[in-house]
Image 1 (cartoon, rainbow, N blue to C red):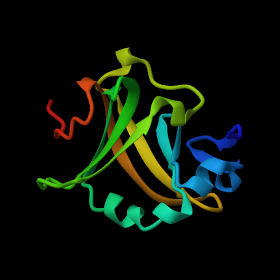
Image 2: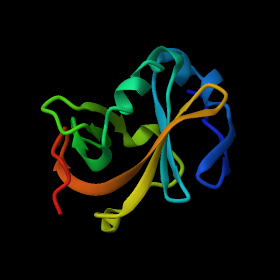
Image 3: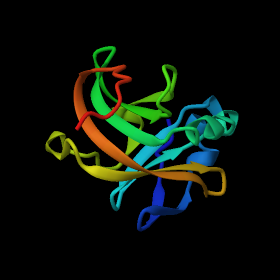
Image 4: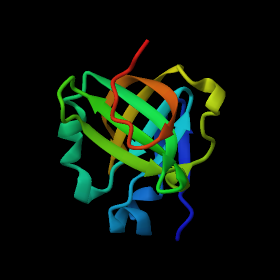
Length: 140
């Protein structure tokens, strides 16, 4: 598998080789965390999913165990019984990840499509849970 490189511009992405990578060709998302923002890189075949993400009134990012591995659940909570959600393995995270003691931290979320172009952004919250999927709204 190729090494994914990202050139950061604060919370933005100046450039990346992700969109020409094997991951992107296979439809595998990649995520990174920089300058207080979780950035999700969306492969072309999932580009329409951005519309579903935008229905969320808030983004809740939960770190927990999924199928025996550490993973992240991105819940786009639209306050219905069937919100849009994606699970991303920790192995799909490019660069540093938030530590468990950051539970409760207010962060930002952004989705990036080929370009790279920011397609969507939203305030988000980070939490640590035992198991994924969690799919629960944020509880103060």
